[in-house]
Length: 460
Image (cartoon, rainbow, N blue to C red; front, side, top):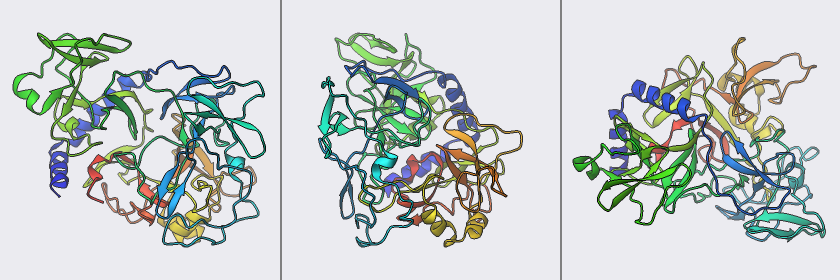
């Protein structure tokens, strides 16, 4: 409770308009920067692609992102693939696995006449007959005798959702909990694989809704002060009681975008892209970003997400800052993973719409449109990035529209999934639709698109 009160106090002390403007400025200046990564040995057929949301990822010859399916503890067992094992095959799964309570195993899954197999959606990355292991890249044997590439003993796949080099529509790195662990409610999803970021020891990079954020290895946020420079720190004396400089060892040397500032004789501080780095002693827990709410302080990102559509706004809520339409209505994303052994996603327009229709309208598409309207794109608006695109949807089916559809809507989509508003939100800042669905919307439901969601730890 104490941590919740501290978090809310710091949130309410921030000036939302100033904060939004400050973050916008940072986003514009950093949007052209890409995250640096360590060069590691890899097979010649693979390379690294820079992506908008996930930073550097491994890709095949066609530029398609490589994914792993890490094992995750669910409520009634484990799903995904353990290191050195393969569980994704071409058999069509017909019944539920009972991994996510309260539903038992053995329930018939929907639309079996068109249900894909795991490998229909996730083609395995197969190796040539003469392929040899390289560094962290190894070879695993499939049941049919084919050899499959693995990275750090995790089998590699591509996604049929990705069409162009740099697409990451198949999955994401963002964790649902600060500690990165599973909570039993979220499906075991696929994760883009990539090289380690180019960082000094003690640092890490975490994917957030607004960018690839620099943290300590304990997941605490890293901050920079506007008054500092690469040659001199303005945060001294009393300032350092709450803002602790991140010290560099005596033998540390500058490399890449990293340098070292000597704050005092023998006291050396890490500097990233010209900014000395600090932690905030009042951060209530890992993943918190509340230290950026003080004037002049900001979080540090290795790269920012693309700019949002110009018609979108940011709205303050009791639990953080949420993305909203021009009228201030909160924007929601739909997420879904079925309770099957292969944990197939069901949140994309090409997936079955049975789950979504059940949650948003009791199976009635008209009720879905009434309760959860699509966020329509203006006639003059156009796609702004791969993350935020305008797509054409048949509102009666929820699938991508074709030329024969009598009714088509131009709607905004995040990661190629349409976004929605909620009819129960009556004023800017309302988030009454958040967590609608199974297990607070984590398994099958709708959740607000938070731009700052670190306040919600302990509030939900």
